[in-house]
Amino acid sequence: MTDWRSEVLRRLACSKFSAAEREEIARELAGYLEDYCQDACKSGLEEPAAAQAASDELDEDKDLDAHLYLARKEHPMNVNIRTRQFWLPAVTVFLAGAFVLAGFHALAVRVYRAYGAEEGAVHSYASLMHSVIWQDSAAWMFYLGWLYVLPFLGAAGAYWSRRKGAVPSVRIATGLFPVVLFTAIFLGQLGAIQNGASLPFLSMFPLPPSHLFFPFLSPAGSLFLSWILIPCAALLLGVLPCLWGTPARQDAVASMI
Amino acid sequence: MIGSNIKRGSSELAILSVLAEHPLHGYEIARRIESRTRSALRFTLASIYPLLYRMESRGWVSSFWQEAPTGSTRRYYRLTAAGRKKLVPLREEWKELFRALERLAEAHLD
Image (cartoon, rainbow over all chains, first blue to last red; front, side, top):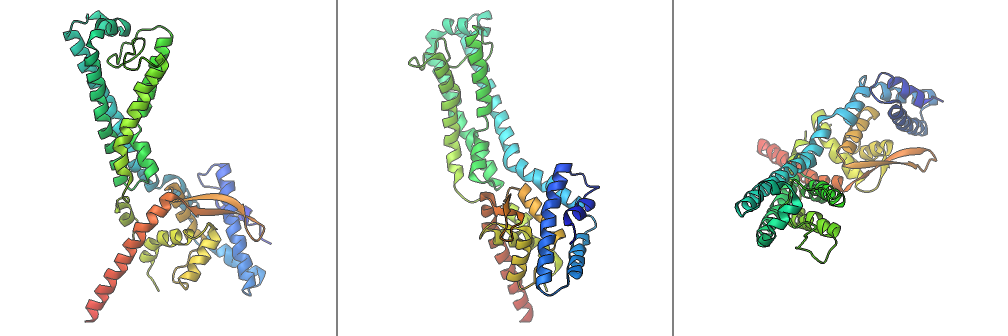
């Protein structure tokens, strides 16, 4: 009886696979060859002839190891599809979200300064908020303005992802990707507040210790609501219409012939 | 006999179609396709595994090790949600292609 595992391992000896991958592939391909031999014997072939036929299958492609490696690791479509369906739209939406946020922040700081916040105070969250606290409506305006933009960002990401043939779960992940940024800001602000540090950035939003927007919540709860839950819901609002409909057919066409 | 280019292009459809029914291991997939197509499409070890690995990388199929009816452990492949989504337009594309070729052939005969 031929030791097919060793035979396949011998064929994969020069491949770029790791030892563990080589072992796994050898196990799988050996299973194929064993089944092939068994069927050949059942159909009337003598065992040596069946083994020879199986061996011929294994030797059919001299570059089998390279083709398996390309299929598993290096085939451009592997990278392209994942990149086209998720990473490219997700990172673009993420960057767009960061630019929008920075833009709103810059605008808010200008307005606060124009309304009398001291130059130095702008870089200290607590003093800034206390000096402009009477401009609560201005803070609302910036926060809501930012929220209004988020559904469009979510929709853009999900639509782009859908155009590339992504399934709904990938469309959702793409549209909600900017939440990664908001989570980082939330954690940074939470840490800063707990350590009593000033917050030099993103002081336009309804944040603790004033947290006037959500006074019924703890500072952490207020931060979580304003930085993660509400923005996430706004992004999701944009994603929802893009969850229906079948993916574009360009990938199907590309895979033909 | 179907030409090699068409065979290559239809391989993905063939594999996705047989996996749409239930999970199969590599050898079973090859034999199932061969019997369903009356040997018009025949997969060998060298042709089926690169395809299966590529389809797994693309997320159309996933794999798991399981004991086969013969008692040996085999790596089974099953269709993922992405694979099912892929299969629907792919079937339509191929139907369209064959209808178009049929029309072309009929026009030529006329």
